[in-house]
Length: 177
Image: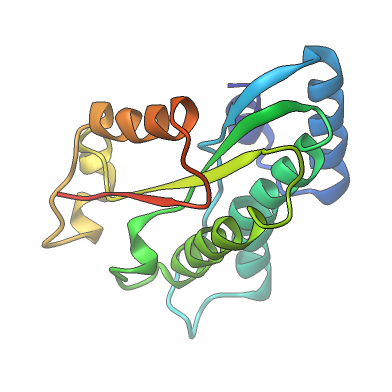
């Protein structure tokens, strides 16, 4: 919730010093915790030919590095056997026009989760939910995604619950119709 609000207000979650300071301050304030769920990530959309370096950096630094840093810093504060659940998205396996940066960042997060579980200490679990477009967002994104079947947010919530409350780790939890 805090990161989501920060992202909407300032669009600066991806700032390396800001995310580290925000994460560290939040984790120190909260103290011990068992799980972190992230659903934040700013993505830019343009054709590959028209995508600027700044647009690429916004997506990479927010959606990818924001989440990498959440785990990197959070591992110091999370309880033994705690759980991080990140978000990617279906576009890395089902690409659409103008979404190359989003798809690239989503693929990187999926790969990060597959690999980082071998290196995080104390039984910490890390998973990622990779959903298709949500029914609740279809009005905004549906036109961009012909042929996609939206899923209800309640189904995506179940994937997050599975990650947090289950025992799996290093998994990409696909939610698609």
